[in-house]
Image 1 (cartoon, one colour):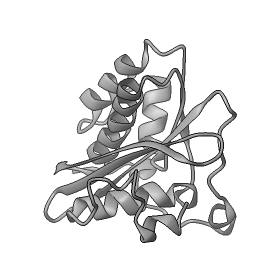
Image 2 (tube, helix red, strand yellow):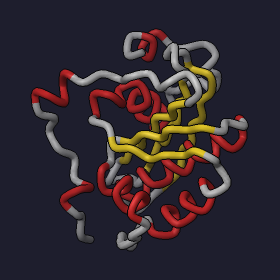
Image 3 (cartoon, helix red, strand yellow):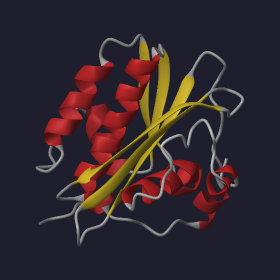
Length: 174
């Protein structure tokens, strides 16, 4: 199995460590997405957290499943985010992920990753009806809250009502 450089986990540089989650403008909902992938078992926890301009969590979703690669897991996490936007009835959405490879392929519509192409194509078609839907890369330090939920979902330690009764471990990252 070949892993592209953009899909590898990189150690954050000093500038990235200093970055923080930034709220969207008032008319936009920001959805941060992430996946936690165990390469030995294939277990995945995927999460999407929707927040408004005040930073309040207004919706969230998690999913646990098996995947063959981190790239497929990350792509599925973005799909969870798009589906969350659809179900919640959001109209203007900014979706963020800390996986540059998946974001780049979706934005350019250049699907070249054997393990995630069908998921990425599905994400693009699901987002088409939205009047304003953007995909952006953010550093891992901006995605800490969703990373916490994804890691806990992967090992079945995330409560089902995590977005309405925020666990203390997550609260410290918001």
